[in-house]
Length: 245
Ligand code: ZN
Image (cartoon, rainbow, N blue to C red; front, top):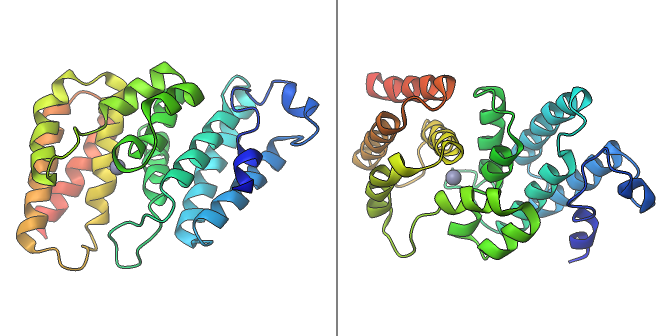
């Protein structure tokens, strides 16, 4: 695919590096952002929800990088491009069947805006968190492109193969105490996003199924308490709102 080469330019460079300029191809942050936005538009059929979420996320990073020149802006964009390609063709379970990539970007956005998370490794892991489990992405690929630390966090967030969703939920709670801090915070934001999505349940989901899902959410929250106060508070609020509804 042609955009492959376009978006993986200088994946190891930070925006302050000179190699990007020297390449004569992408000359600045604006061009870089535009190239990525165009790629994501192609991959998501110009889905408004996807592009809106992307714009909000990029807007946050753009503002931040002005005071933090070592923030790996281009690497974060590359993570989104990588995840978008890997999740291409997959959709969320919502009624609009939104392209799947809206979810990992939304999880990163929630960590950033609500959780106050500024660790680039956590951001990248958030964007990649479902790639090992649900796409052709491999641990080697992620290690090569984003480093051992990120790859390890994504691995932690991956359910063992061939588990039913019910088994996986139980397994996650069992294994939650052994997760790294980075994996915990992504896990909480992931669950927050998914529970918020259930405000409009997918077609065919019974009340019982939804109820169970919130039950698992509460258990997970109880096990992971003490990780990120704001995300936990939001998660509890979402669970409470559901049980009072
Ligand atoms: Zn997820």
